[in-house]
Amino acid sequence: MSVAKIIEISASSPISVEDAVRGGLKKCAESVKNIKGAWINETKVVTDDQGNVTEWRVNLRVSFVVE
Image (cartoon, rainbow, N blue to C red; front, side, top):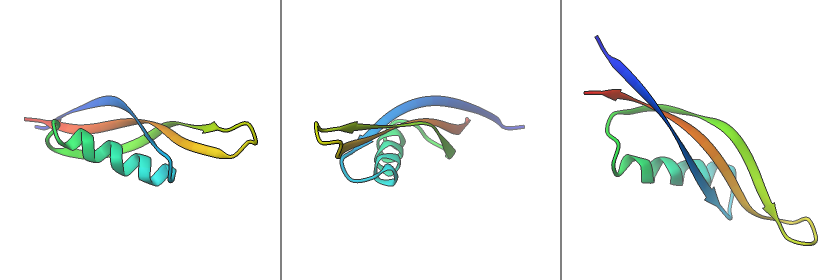
């Protein structure tokens, strides 16, 4: 029998949502083993005064198998 746990993390990138997700999962994998998947819970942007996107932010739910 396997048991999975879900944690929530936040990550950001000036490039894209995909880059924020990849960076967040890479950092998470430094301390969490057996990551099996993730889903984007929330997406946000930071803008400058002209309305240009300066940063993409995501909240991720990451699932992993507990040993």
